[in-house]
Length: 443
Image 1: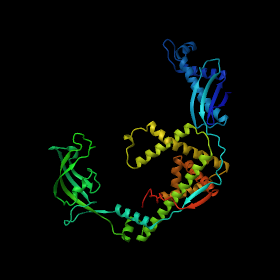
Image 2: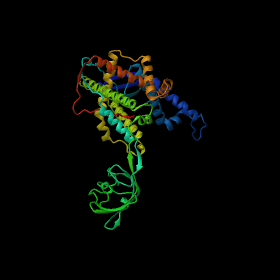
Image 3: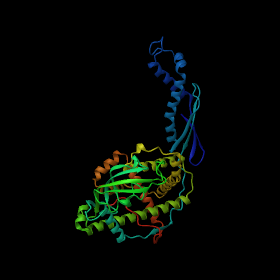
Image 4: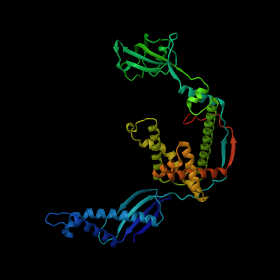
């Protein structure tokens, strides 16, 4: 039987000394040599007939290393389970020399969750900011929808180019009589007023008409990438090949119908009001949860395992990568995160780890659990949000091993609600700098 000595290095670190009895070491070594004897081929001996002393002379170091690794694999996790130790990370495993006829020792250093006697989670004073949907917010959303659904129409012959028009132009550029290839473009698309081509360039386009060619001079910026011509005066020959204006759709029932299942413009506005109200509700929920975390982290002081912090940093980085990928960024072209970037994320990671541990401790102390019915209700709600059947979503969650993650999310919401139900909520007007949040997704 393996003897295990446990030493508490700190609240979150333990040093475990494993001592495996000599008879188990001997049996493990003998088994390694028996397996070798069956397969190894050495000149002068038939397969399976190599003497043990010859095998030892050839393979002693390998056998001892393999045996040590095998014994560690067979004893480490069972030893943890026997002593009811659930590490969050294994810092190191250092084996001593393995020899026949002697016990084998190895020392493991691990990190474990800190013991938390959670306190001061009842009677918190929390602020709830009073916000309501304003008609100007609805109007702003409507205008964004109109902008998004605008159509481009050729400008009339009676007017020239103006700010906001979309153009296709050819531009020839030269400095001191020499062409500048970097600034010479054909069929270049631009929106007047954005100055995407060069700073203060678009103003020279206003008033032009299709098929017109115009020459202008413009001083290049001092920080122009080509230093040889930075700050010099460039000559441009501009040919306007195409000009279109953005025509916004009429604000009527037909506009609403084109956007989806809305019979009238009023139906669309009502849906927008609901979205904005949900956004405000979500913001209020986040604000209250942040206040809860701030209060609990301040009143419950404990050491955090470094391994948990590093894992949380990895989670933050993965989330950032996923967000970039969703916006069309090729992740393969991005450099790996630097240690400086990881260090910048550590304070937030420590806070997140502490929050998770404290909330878990509250849940355990108050015996808060998630029933199967509550889990099913959460699946139903998410299925409706995603527009899929409940059975299909459940299958996807089970196949992706995400059902436990959903249960953990529901549990955390219940713990937050418990703390909030046992807090004093003070309703206040929001700070003057607070603004109505923008929706992550617009209709």
